[in-house]
Length: 605
Ligand SMILES: O=C(O)C(=O)C[C@H](O)[C@H](O)COP(=O)(O)O
Ligand code: SF4
Image 1 (tube, rainbow, N blue to C red):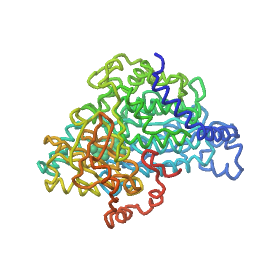
Image 2 (cartoon, rainbow, N blue to C red; image 1 turned 90 degrees about the vertical axis):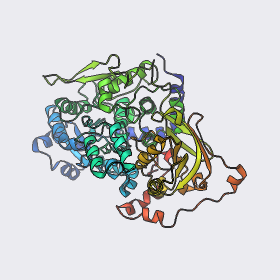
Image 3 (cartoon, helix red, strand yellow; image 1 turned 30 degrees about the vertical axis):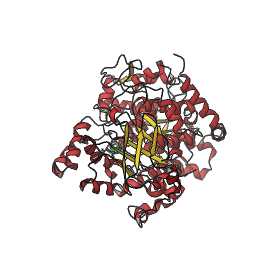
Image 4 (cartoon, rainbow, N blue to C red; image 1 turned 30 degrees about the horizontal axis):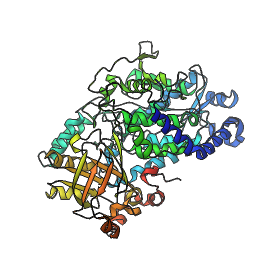
């Protein structure tokens, strides 16, 4: 099938608008690629320091025999269930590269925040910026500059975008991403959400709620909702930066170990062709392929921020108009919580990323002429890995969907368009994920109730002040105000109100979690209120119309009056409080430098 016109048009306009920055990026890549290898180029003292900690045989290989040396960047910690399995991956990798006469070193570690632990707490105000801390930590690790390739160990929300931004600063290196896979299914996400809503109404106590939460999040591996972490995995498959089909194989089994070893073999290029440098793999076609799979699976709205930053790190400039144009032609092929009741294990069982990529390629909605870390190109990513008794990895074709309540063909999708919509109007530009919102809630018009924090909204809910049609505006939540936290704790109270039959919506310059979804939410409003954005002009009682069908978000106030309004000021002390404690003092510079959400909230440009 020829490439869809819109996919071609969007890709071409990205290529053209990015020409200056992409050109400069590739120039730098070529400069680094032309140099001698690290052990031959650096001074003797540098080389001695670099390999002093290595076992003697490895030292001999890398210094004398000029064997390839792989840098491992790991996001292992025990806090993220998704990252706990990464602890011993470096040992597996070193063992595998040694078998191939090469060496590997842990170049460095990067921090990783669990948004599930910090959700609704002050720590969440460090979350978005932790992405750029991870990018900087990745650069610190790889700046030792003695590597011939890199392996990135990480899975979750900001960690993969941060690792990508950091790795792309060393675009001359072949680089493969290594996940650990999802935990097995426990209490379903829908059942968990129901207990939360009961708790929000005081119908169950802390004991029952804790029991439900721990039955949902119960063991090592990524959480099983299709949020930002699992959207990362889908997008890495779509960009060909994984071993094909590795994304959703559960941890703790032989196949997972073998896939980790295969990542080491892949970055060494012993698959019959050398592994291309990441800066060449990640071009405008790869970025668009990732955007397309995000839209086709109803992925996380956080990627409307993170992938802008990832693209920018490769010299590519994308924006929300690009996402919106693609969303208008990319069908919704997957129903995975919060966009359905299935979890990511059921998504994998139905056909997984390989099914999605094959359907989109065959429909002409993804670029086929792309580089991947595998010589077979993107078609290798339409298959799924099979472990065998002899530990030889084989991949199998994926036929029809094995569960059409979870995965559907492009010829018969869940909906003809992707799950994301751009909203514009007199409240600025914002985005909404409609794939998880009931159709009768795609248009909401109601009086506004304005809040300066999610805590204020929760108090109003508990006081019964929101039992009516209402558009809740939560402002002062943008990157420059308080680090743009996720406001996912608002999902249960707003879902309770919606469940009572009220027409409710959320409008905010903050973010939601990739696990949010059933309540219509216009998020990432740019410019943010703290930077002079129009949310600062909204008053209690103003009628707001959120129309996800027309793609508009407006306050229905007389234009002359709207123009004459003076912006509200931040409640005294609010942002001072937000700048103190939990290390938030250390992020003041990032808050000052952060670009808008639509510019990826980048803090380094
Ligand atoms: O996917 C994302 O963007 C997320 O940030 C998911 C967060 O980790 C949630 O906080 C975990 O989901 P809950 O257990 O509902 O709080
Ligand atoms: S998916 Fe989210 S909640 Fe789960 S481990 Fe990763 S960061 Fe934590």
